[in-house]
Image 1: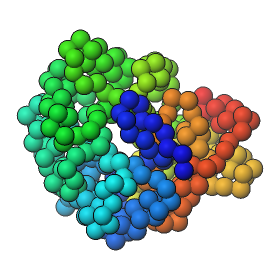
Image 2: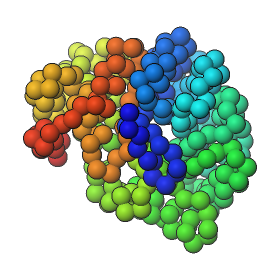
Image 3: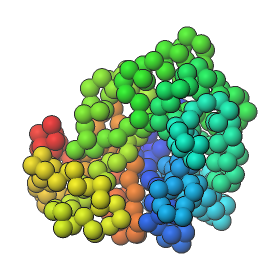
Image 4: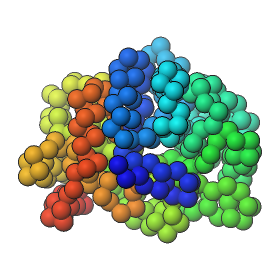
Length: 315
């Protein structure tokens, strides 16, 4: 499978990233191991997680996903087979989003321990921290890069003005820059990335890996009414998509997927994979059947009429 260069990081990844937010939440340890085995055996190599996954689950404290990934890497001797992406800055009990130098120095050690690796391939600022200057955060990353504890840095959830400001600080102060962005982006949620932010990423050669690539599962087509929301633990986040625009996007997905004899989710991911300005989408699965479907998206070629139909419905 042909890999794609991830911005200026020096990393190459397959055109689909596994979303590890499900590990320790809707996928137990055995299921998680089975999913990771299948994912890597299919030729994919990038796994996305965060220290905060999955604090939202009753009884969890955060770090569950990283810990499962670390145990899998060790048991399979798989470190050289995967690109590990994790994040820092979410509330892990400190009561706020935190990208201070002191916090990053502590958090990275916890992530390395849970992941059982010597270095994190790509370390992302999970959220903007309005209380910490970019100079301080990027300076902390510079120390970690020099120490070999991380290999590259990026950010998630920045808008165009915030990313521009961070890049300007990097250039002016001679500090590491954000070489990867992780924005929310899918056929329904296009507004925050398309436009200024996408233009900036393309102009600056910033790698882009998208999250909520299936709009919390809505673009799988299994949620057609409020009665469907109980079909999974994540269904509660889908209600906002049940509107005329959402139904129009589903209709376009139904038409394109019928023509290609594939599933709606495969079409939705293929649209992102073929989108200029995107390196790869992140997608999660909780069963081998789901994962096998997602894997097919990487080889699905949509033609210009397919793209036009999806673009029109989602505009």
